[in-house]
Amino acid sequence: MKALAAIKNWLIKLGLAPLQSEQKPALQQLEELVAWTAKTGHGEEKSKYYTHPHGQYADFKDFDTDRMIEDFSAAFSSQSQSA
Image 1 (cartoon, rainbow, N blue to C red):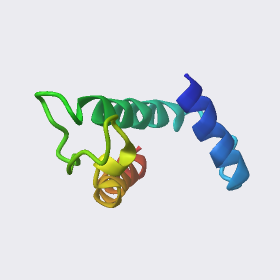
Image 2: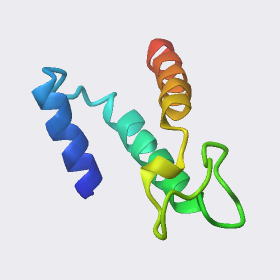
Image 3: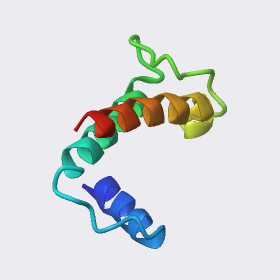
């Protein structure tokens, strides 16, 4: 839930909040997808965005975040247009 609060604060700073009730499920789905991607990066079931380790501990540097943003943006923009 900390991530959801951080995203909400970020959206407020960008002037994109408050969220409409129909936007909240998509935001929660995005949060879960990002968390799953980060969690599975080093495991047996590697994320398709995982590149290679940049240190001893997992970090977002270990992922192709540019491609992740492009893919997630496309998926969620098409989802919001169909709603």
